[in-house]
Length: 284
Image 1: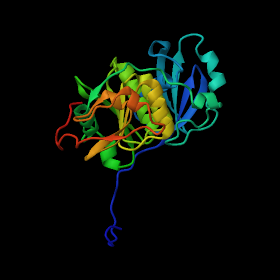
Image 2 (image 1 turned 180 degrees about the vertical axis):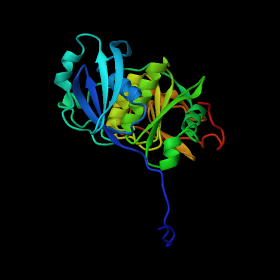
Image 3 (image 1 turned 90 degrees about the vertical axis):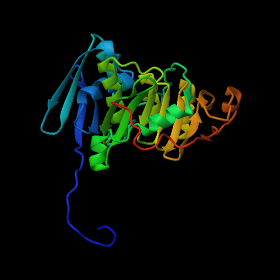
């Protein structure tokens, strides 16, 4: 039914399936995810959850089954022994980043500090606009999220999609590691809202900024400040808002000092000009 008129038709919809992350034979988490780029998901989840570094992962095996798919990850000797204490005990539904974490400390763990970077407003606008035309599953279904890395020298260098926003970011993290791409000084671009775990995961990736189409939570802002991340939200055609690291965003006609940026219990918000015109796309 559209505009009061009923009609039959067809629509492309994304697939969603249970994916078990299995470390050295023991299931650590079960996620609902889009069954694509699962090697990236396994590597990225291991990295952003602090389970293992890229050098600690010996192999990743994708094994389809009757009820879902197992992503079997084999770690360096001794690493899997400590996973039992922080195992995600229940299934994490689509879009859930913390379901099953068994302690409050795990939920609000401190993020790693990232390399401090500054960004001209034009680069933030270009990063936000760069996703156009590069989300094949999203364009076809309007039902999935995307996470991408934009760099000063390469534009949009990598993008991954998934029905879950956390999964999309984990897939991006894994793809970057497997391709040997250094995210330092880059911008992670998200089509979703920014909750605390999205900031934690981005800090593990090592990018200097997050640019998202939606607004962040208060805890996400505090965590971004702790990590040294620039956090930009509500990035639309008419501009964007800076929620953390405003002193490192070069805004024409506006100077924000570190003292000013840190003087607010509710972080200051700065808006900026429209991004590049439609049609200006970065290579991928």
